Length: 230
Image (cartoon, rainbow, N blue to C red; front, side, top):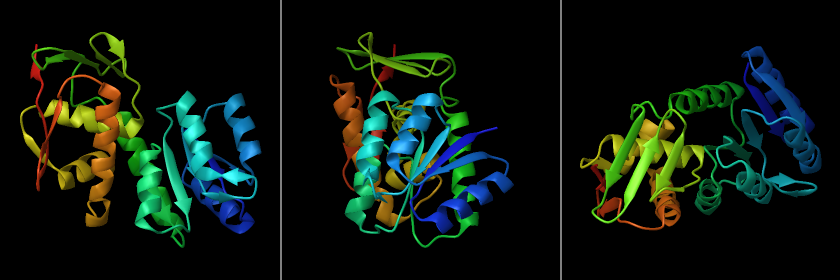
């Protein structure tokens, strides 16, 4: 049974979300304060955190940034009244897997949770066992079974969303992939307003890969993985 922590200070929303998740077959626990959620994570790591942004004892964005430092692959859904595009972009820059704005229907939230778990469980299926790529100077190794990525034998720590994007692009090496395709295949949605999210993830991935020119930008269209199988 998947374990989900819901960090939300509004009692009615928190209890409603927890109850709906439990009715949908998940083990869910709710926390009104970041301090309580932090202790819960330290005691037992969940399979997913659903995080409000504005919490009385802290900033939800900063809490997730802190958690992602220790648990980069921990799936996160932000659940917040902050609807500005800049807030959504910040959420994805911090490594969240989805962003849902209030008000929302509990049914939609549960559907997004189910879709996220499907993506996480299927991550790596596009590349069987091990695949090694070269750009002529550097090597990039993807081990789907171990969920590891290395550049020149150095480990690269990716968030769950970043892993899905790299796996999808590398699994289609040499093929032009549009932003819409990445959204549909890696995030299960294709809203135009989210296309900037793809650019944000690609920027973060390039920074983490450090060396080599693995992902080419095709202006106006999308991206192409340029590494060749070694």
